[in-house]
Image (tube, rainbow over all chains, first blue to last red; front, side, top):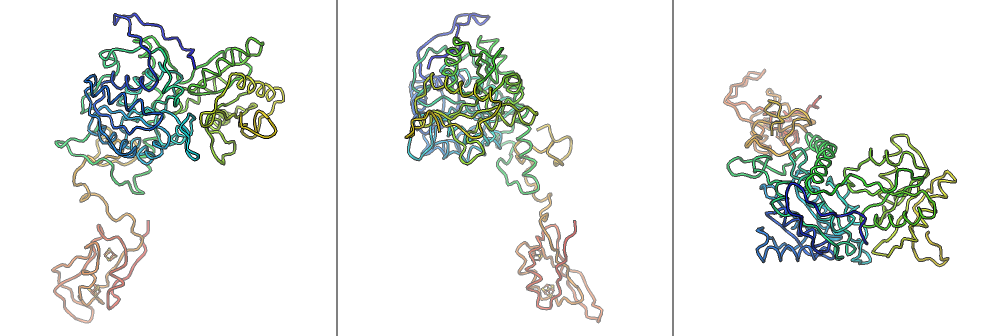
Length: 418
Length: 111
Ligand code: SF4
Ligand code: SF4
């Protein structure tokens, strides 16, 4: 899954070029936690996140990282300990995947509604049953309404860069929300790519650790109660405050990316547009699959098809304005995801977001929802090319496909989708 | 923390403390504790025989015994008076149920 984003070495005011190593996505996440100089990590290992837990343990053991590593007995405890550590003002980190994320689920709301700047790496993986350890976005999509900021990564470098930016965003006084950075299970977590590291002093200059007093934290000298009962008389107001914090967060997410580019030379947006300038049909994708879609777009362009792609990097808060602007002029929109929203009108979670963003602005155009790659099922460029052809059909007929096309499902008729 | 807009306690979503933390230790003494009451007990002092059962049974200690003299319409004189502290009364109606002479009436709260 080669990356299309170029990782050019940066020689700027900060001096020497950055060190380039070969690393897996799991290692990249751990290195980012190290370079952000975290104080506390509470991690329970779960496939395919395990390399992150292992690497953090190794970094702490060999003295490269001066952090408290809490050996918890479950993910529920991992998230609880991380929230509690954050509540004392510490810079925290945890990581999980799949069923582990589900076990954390109760605490995910607590982290976000208590406004604790927790940073988590999520090695995306399918949900049982049947038991499956391979990649899809079932777990990530299950946390989309928990009030976290969610950033998807396309390659190993993005895992690292997104993690560094996550600390900037989460701990910013105008945000104070937990941030999750995804890395596709195995596809990124276990695959080695070139990774450009940023020295710790430069990371800390970019995302400095703030004094404890900048936000309300547990302090015996200044007692406060965190996690109180909110009856019918105040619960609603607290939740609205959370909604507004998420609505305001794009300003800081954008600022984090702008500053990151200025200092380290790699640029990030809420979405990435690929060959969209003159595109007639566009596919919306996310995570590592985006690289594959880019390859399909290249192939289609050679055939003379004006195809384009939009990659969603920041999934929550959903960058509706940017997406609508990018899709305004295309004839048909396809949405490609590795997750199922069971029983939904169209059973694909990302599709619902994209359509809602367009529909509330009065924009209607042929749309097709594609699901692929569930439970780590391989997906090939030629399949995505076929999806684009389906999209071209929809554009020609001027009609949406009213239900999700499950691509690559084995069926007795030998059809490409059902 | 500077969001309290100069007031001691918040009035709307704009000024509640971040994540609804409570930075005022001991504030339960000052805040309303009866907001969900739908019926309030009203003691008919004329009927009340000062048996103290309501005082005993109230789960919230909301019935108070006062050293206040009271003379009933029939001329009977009591040295003490039982009253309801509406700051604490939750309107459960236990007092009205226990009162042997039905001196307590549960009256709907109007809001
Ligand atoms: S209604 Fe309930 S809470 Fe109120 S005074 Fe009577 S027993 Fe106490
Ligand atoms: S239970 Fe009734 S009679 Fe007895 S003290 Fe209370 S109000 Fe009076």
